[in-house]
Length: 251
Length: 251
DNA sequence: TGCCGCAGATTTATCATATAATTGTCGTTG
DNA sequence: CAACGACAATTATATGATAAATCTGCGGCA
Image (cartoon, rainbow over all chains, first blue to last red; front, top):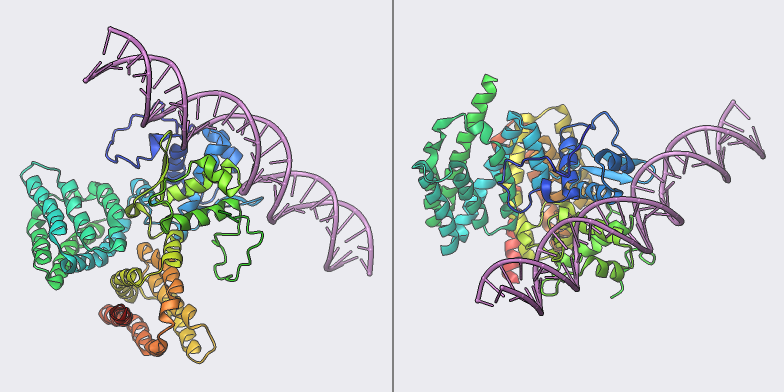
């Protein structure tokens, strides 16, 4: 096994994420990323997790780097370490699924329709509630942000913006407009999940017809009509759910 | 400032959390806990965050321990570090609120009615949806778990169990019964929030009257009636919200 | 036989020190 | 005044040594 966490020969095609970019930043983050993916994809489900000195040898880095990477994975709930017992992978229920790194590892390496459906089941609870709160907490600035997202979607319709990124921008703006930090917390989660699920949604080209549905959400929030905002958002995400159900039935 | 992360003279009154118990486990976890609390309570909002060598001196530990604690806080979104620029506290929007440690630090040290209300706004979206899913995914084992939680609540009514812990057990069982890992993820969050909010809810003694409401949720899930399960859970949490609103009005 | 306890081995935890890499600052120079 | 280069501060990495925790198995003792 030849692990290249130094990234000497890696060509990083995606330049999407600006700041948190895991891999190439330094040895610790490179190891974090590689190990994280390995864990969520089940490489150590039957094999025991290596000792820190074995890991250091395997990845050709110092024990400092190894220990720091392991500590970060521990902080995210993926690992646990005890003297003499060694380091071991935690059961998946302990993983912090709302950590953007963990979710990205899961979706990038283990994408499944089932996971997408479960995630959409979450969105259909969160986003309508966020829209309802946004309608109550509405002010000039928040509405402007949502409006900007909608305008980008409209521009994307005409080919002047990216359809996926503008869609994400709209939903993020609604979450933030809820004025509730717990809802705002889902920003990263929704962004990560939508970005990686593009593989799936791209197969259905008729989906951009939802522009009018997005406008219904925007309008209701502007009017301060929380109930309408909620139901409009429910319908929007329910349509996504229908797509997934269809795909699952075919598969 | 005298930081006792070694816990030599600390008497740990709570023994509640069994495994993840932050403080006394070792120096790294002790420092993680102390630093985490300090950050969320705003100690470094105007003061710059110390360099790692300063931290090591201040806490009387080696740089290894310091770096590993800082790395864990970085993994939880509280810090960011760059060569020459030093380590600095991230804006609160980047904090991983659904990390049990972060939420605990926030609630233990910074408890506010406002935070509790925002959290309840989240629960009123999550838990009813989880109950609805649970009604669909119901099987013998899952129903038994919810039933066990309910039985504990009934026992607590008679003084034979802890009212808070049994209440938590019921809600956790519903989240798990949703058979959706994203909902199950809220286990720790709900547990942490309910445990720390006991200070508040304990002032209202009439609240245990909700036993019948919990039974309504249980019954609906047993019947596979997702709509009833959902509305029953909404009512249950809406009552909590009323308590909070009352308290906020008085304050 | 069966149990208790101790010695050894293994692995993480901690410490200490040295060197490299990154990048902001400031002065110099054209 | 701008661009470049030397310096300095801070994190990043490497290495080696020692401590602490705890599992395993051996041996003694009742």
